[in-house]
Length: 437
Image 1 (cartoon, helix red, strand yellow):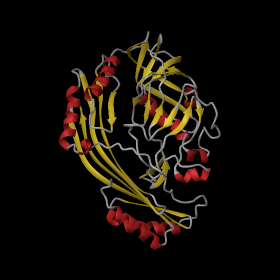
Image 2 (spheres, rainbow, N blue to C red; image 1 turned 30 degrees about the vertical axis):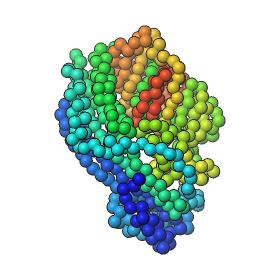
Image 3 (cartoon, rainbow, N blue to C red; image 1 turned 135 degrees about the vertical axis):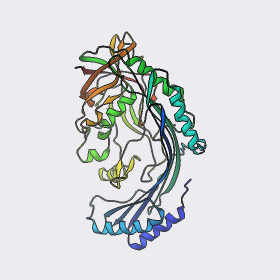
Image 4 (cartoon, helix red, strand yellow; image 1 turned 180 degrees about the vertical axis):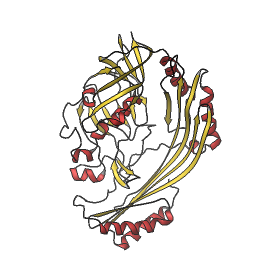
């Protein structure tokens, strides 16, 4: 389904060909959002917006031009500018052609009940999050959001494909007073492709962490058992490993993993997949931002590196096939590569079965990690002490090292997957160096 007019887009392709374009691609992305924010126990902001982003790519004699507009009425003008831009650009010796038609998986993550949600319903959701906050704990921030997304791609190689998706999300960010100040901010969050949210679970998970954080424990330095929650692991991986598995970085020589396909790079306990077909995943989709079918890609199997992620352009340069991971950078107007749902397979172990260690649900400073070398140094916030298999209180410490060494030193992987924004993973226990002041 597509709420726009496909016939108009088909006419635009013909218009581009008449101008002299050898190839033309139009990608339309429409978002319809209701977002309600709360701050310090009160509704602070309500926003309802519908945005249309139209990306145009045209080619003349291996010269590539890009264009962008927010308004379908100006699409022909944009195509004309793309034609002029392409003619003025240098030839791209690596250019082959736009993606061609392939078979698509029959997948849909659309809930009509989400589309029916009103502004008042989303406000009520945000207010309920505030009302569920236990006494003595401050609802510093909260948010409720309903989103409908549409994608439509058409090109001169025969691709014409559309899909719709829905998202429903809420979070609660809580703090509590201590004898010396306040606890770290603790987050409870859920993002789903269906209407029903478990608001009680969202709030209680954050509130439980606040209560634990009030009991401050002493942390130690050295090589320790550290259990990392998927929310924290996601922050770390996004700035390290997940940039190295992008094919374009491999070709450019910016990936630590270049030349390591088939090698035992990680712990044999680690199996990781990029899965855009994962049911109820945040990034589950039928096709990517070039109209290429989304498909599961095995990245790591029992610690062995198996594949990289590709968009169509870089895949053809490397003699590969696109894995359906193209992404449009709205600021640059270019086509890049991006993971979808990163899934880490569960293990069979109870990972809290340790005498002494730590549990981390968030990192500060992950964005300062080195994406090429994998070096990182982060503050664990919120962090907790584990004693005799039980979480006994909050603590302040840092961990540092190299992501590739960290992923070699997996002690255990938990039994139950937890869905984050971009990563679906169990809790994982590592051996890692900790430091305190």
